[in-house]
Amino acid sequence: MESAIYATLTRQSGLMREMQVVAQNIANLSTTGFRREGVVFAEYVARMDAGPSLSMANASGRVVDLTEGGLSQTGGTFDIAIRGEGFFLIETPQGERLTRAGSFTPDAAGELVTPDGYRLLDAGGAPVFVPPDAGPVTLGADGTLSAQGRPLAEIGLWRPVDPLVLRREAGTLFDGGALEPAEGATLLQGFVEESNVNPVAEIARMIEVQRAYEQGQAFLAREDERVRGVIQTLGR
Image (tube, rainbow, N blue to C red; front, side, top):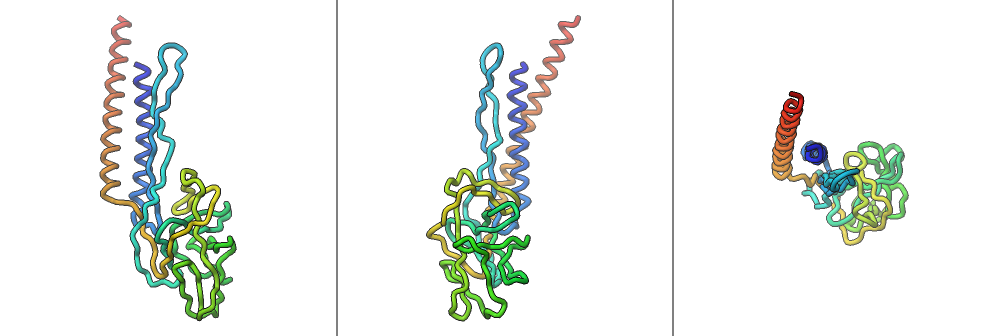
């Protein structure tokens, strides 16, 4: 009986983690460049001191959905969307991070920064600088920023060497470990990429997880009643 309870508890714990991930996905339906996540369930076999081993659920792993989101036209000079594979490289206090959220603005020094003040890096890993008096700025599909026909910088696109290493750090920022240049993608000026969360699919998944959790709770309640009945019977 204890083995069944332990196995069910690990399943319940995993379902709670998945519900938290689904809730986070739904909360970021309108977040620019957001990437939905999913929970990976795996089997964990525990060795018992006596008797056969016990198979339990392990749901500590997460997977990032890299499917492209839709485009939203803003007309902003430094609003940039990626079509294809790759991420922008951002400089943060914790180190270089990846993002698909391409909404940037020049700061007082003329460097392009995110809404949180993190600097956008170019193909060489240096901050992207746009002189205040540069005039109208245009962006080529290859990431080249130009003003009046004069190249200013080339925005770099990067990807993890191992896609399985990609981990969400906060919001739309990811830690990708070792990086390499991403090739074959194009950049669009005046657009931002929307969240790739499908609201219908996420709500349906939330209902499935909730029902599965309720079934597990009902099983635990029945097991508790069974154990109490055994104790009462033996105590007579």
